Structure formats: C-alpha cells, structure tokens
Length: 340
Image 1 (cartoon, rainbow, N blue to C red):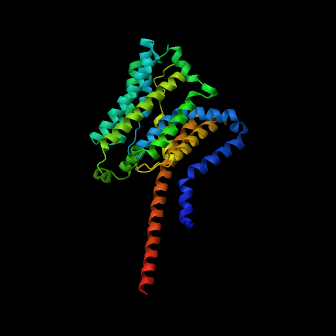
Image 2 (tube, one colour):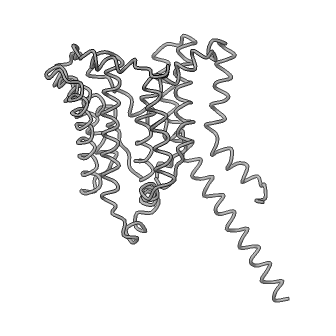
Image 3 (tube, rainbow, N blue to C red):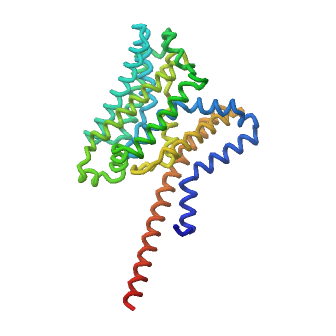
C-alpha cells in the first residue's frame, strides 16, 4: 500500500481541486438561494451545458495531443448558417444537416492541415480562423438571422424521447464514446503519446500528421453539429450563435486538469470542469447577478483554470521527483546493507 505523505496528499488535492470547488460552489448557491438545488433547476443546468459539453470533449482530445482550437465557436456559427441557408433553399433538413456538418469537418481539415502538415502554431492558426469563419457567417447572412427553417428541423430542438431532451442524450452518448476512445482504443493512446512526447512518437512510427488532422476534423464536425443543434433549439440561425463557446470549452478542459502541454487528461475530470462552469453560470443567474459581472467572473475562471493547470503539472513533477529520490535512497540503503 503506498505510504501517505504530505506530498501525496497535496497532489491529490491539486488533482481534485475542481471537484472540491464544485461541491463548495453548489453549497454556496444552495445557501444563498434554496431554489438552486431544486430538481427542475438541476435539470436546467444539465440542459444548458449539453452543447458546451459536446464541443468541450473533442477540444480536450486536441489539447491532449498538445494542440488547441480557438475557432470551434465560429465553426459552429458558420456551419449553422450554411446548413440553415441550405434548408431554406431546398426545404430538406437532412441536406442542411449534412452540409452543415461537412462545413465543420472541412474547417477542421483546414486547421489540421495548416497545423500538422505545414507546422504552423495551432494557437495562431485557430485564432485567425476564429475571426475568419465568424466574418464569413456575417457576410453570408448580411448580419441578419436566418429564419424560415423547416418545422421538422426546429422540432428536434425540443425532441424528448422518454421525457429526456435529445441534447442530454447526445451528451451522455458523447461522454461514453470519448471515455471509451481515450481508455480502450489505440487512437486514444496515440493521441496521448503524440501530446506527451512528439519525438518518441515519431520513432515509434506513429502517423502523427494523420492523428492530428483527424482529431481536428472530428472537432470541426462536432462543432458544426452543435451549431445546428443550437439552431434547432432557437428555431432560427443567428450569425453569432456560437460566439464565446471556444473560450467556455477551453475553460472547461483546463479546469478539468487536461495538461495544456499535452500528454495527459481524464474524461471524468473534464466533466467536473463542465459541471463547474454550468453551476457557476446558472447560480449567477439565479442570484440575479448582472450579465456583465457574469462575463467577468467566467473570464477570471479561465485564468484560474490556467493557473490550476500549471499547479497540477508542478505538483506532478514534484511527486515524480520525490518518488525517484525515495527509490534512490532505498536502493543505496539496500546496497550498503548488502556490502556490510
């Protein structure tokens, strides 16, 4: 049984800091307003974070492979716009959904190719396309909302088989798939390997470009689908529907302890980060806090998430170094006893 040490306890607290903070945050909001912990409000929180969770999961895989995508919100917007215009023009929801998801996948392909094949910095590339895709969505709509979507499509936004909204069902399915891919497939191990040590991955013969590009494509396709899901729920396509989702997704992932340098991460911890952001936003609304203050607090949460990420990496490094020193001391003691 591993010996309990101050370093081990400190590491455990750092790694589970967001879960502890989540419990404290729920307790605080429940004390300030008992309505917060009602079943109806808890269901509302889950519904509110469903689309964000769908985007955050593939973003987590990108960061695990030491990349980032700041354009997912804009990709969601552009995909919803193109998909919506397709539906209005053809009257076919299927055509609109297929085109919208394809637009997202193509945007991911562009991002992945520039980052992986040409070797450009993922932060700079996706930051640039965050503006480019958003601008293109505004250009295509002339800054106006796309209305007149087929009723068969908009009804999907409130579709609730067995009394459970489709957004929640999709989120649960996505969580299961993400967990399985990360923990039980070769691709999950390859993503962690590429993010952890690029040179070693190359020597192992991994197809690094294919791994990176495919992850970007999946991220773009999911973002496109989320944009369409939001359009169905709203009943129309706003040219700013996905605005801010990229920073929220990044906050969720970093709060979840996924190392920004890549190579590590757990789906369970990402869910803690997702729940924290959802509880924070909902609780502030319940308390009647100004939307401007809410924006400030969410931004500060991102800064805290980055600090937590650094703290986790330092704590892990110290733990590894401490374990190595203990093993070295035990080896020296055994060696001296043998010599004696």
